Structures are given as structure tokens and as C-alpha cells.
Amino acid sequence: MGAPCIHCEARPAADGLGLCADCNSRRETRVLYRRRRGWTPEWEAHLRRLTRRAQLRLPLFDEADQPA
Ligand SMILES: [Zn+2]
Image (cartoon, rainbow, N blue to C red; front, side, top):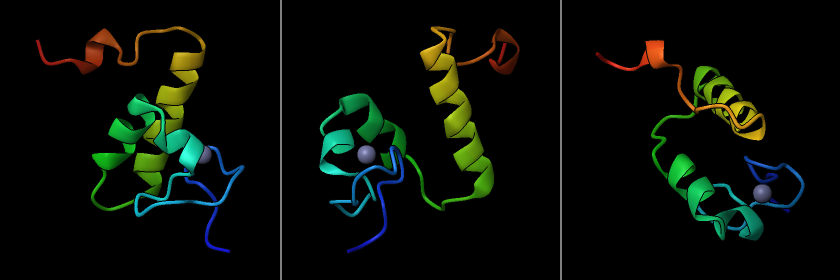
């Protein structure tokens, strides 16, 4: 089999994005991963941070991160 899903790592990746069928069926997950060009550890950490914030029901981005 191929690599595990880059999002949940619980099921094998099923498409070119590296997402399993389950994650790929979720629009927000698909949009998140479709934006990547090069996969970097920094980007992955960024995504994990966003996932954590979403789980905690925090805004995805700090207001300080936004341009004024
Ligand atoms: Zn998945």
C-alpha cells in the first residue's frame, strides 16, 4: 500500500493529494491541503496548529497574524 493519509494517518491515501477517501470527502480538509505546493515541516506544523485551534474552537488565526 501507499503512504498513510497526510491528515489523519489512519487510512491509506487515496488520491494525489495524499488524503484518504474520508478526509478527501470533507471540503474543509480538501481545501486546506490543496493549497500546498511544497510540503515542508513548517507547513505541516502550521496545519497541526490550525487543527488544534479548530478542536479548541479558537479562531484559526490570531488577530496579530492578520494584516491590519
Ligand atoms: Zn484521512
